[in-house]
Image 1: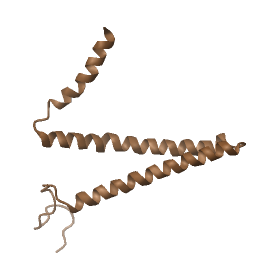
Image 2: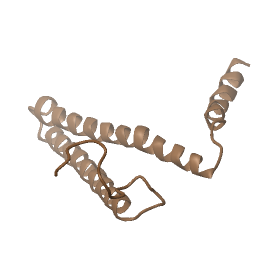
Image 3: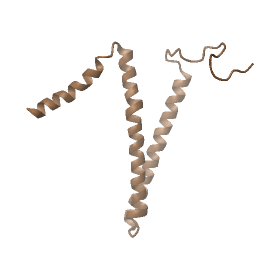
Image 4: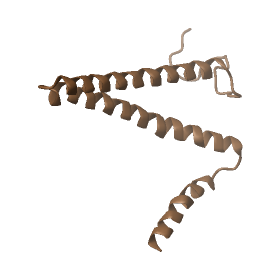
Length: 120
């Protein structure tokens, strides 16, 4: 009975957060915020941990064994590949969102700036 209640609570918890969503745009921004604030940092952390684990395998655990050193080098390579792919995709997405306007009106509007350095 306790497991069923815990399972029900686990499935009902996201519904509580969705109660604040009024329309599709809010739902979209909620999902994008989850991706940007949770998923991307977790993926970067995993790639970093894989790289560090490979470094430990290469330099500490594989001091006497060539096979263990090769496994560590492969882990380091996959960690670096993961970083490269994520940074590349992140850069492409930022270029795309910077060049294409998706109804965002918070960009530069011209006129005199109200704060910051003003050149006369």
